[in-house]
Image (cartoon, rainbow, N blue to C red):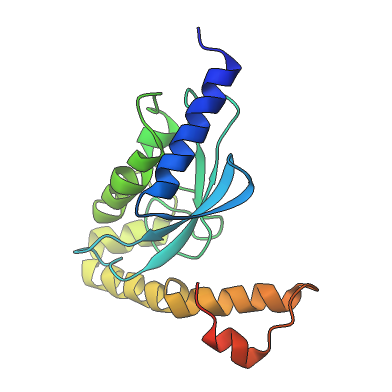
Length: 180
């Protein structure tokens, strides 16, 4: 039986490991809430896309799976377009303490984007296109990448968030020059 402090130590270790890897991580409320900058895998229609994926770690992590969701829009059969919720068995049902956060971003999500499962969709339109009109599916993915998953889209989103904040004095020109 593991103690709560052992689970907390594992959580901290996994988050630090992710931060020290090639992934850009933005901590939100503590090491149990953060955003990971995720790049579309090469050789897929998602190549060139950049997404913010929110991760919430439950108190019982690593014995209970993390909650993950795409924050910017993505067109995919197994990702809900409105909420960003991901339907992935290895996270939702088959998670074990043998997995860690790196598995999600280096294996599970890239494989999901490369090999969608249209028979268990969260986005029925994406699943139907994937199955029956693959070229149209790829075109729609490319359109979403252009509109919602580029560095420019990130900057524009950051600027709109910043301009809504009382703490920001950024001008529109400064927003145009702002880097992630």
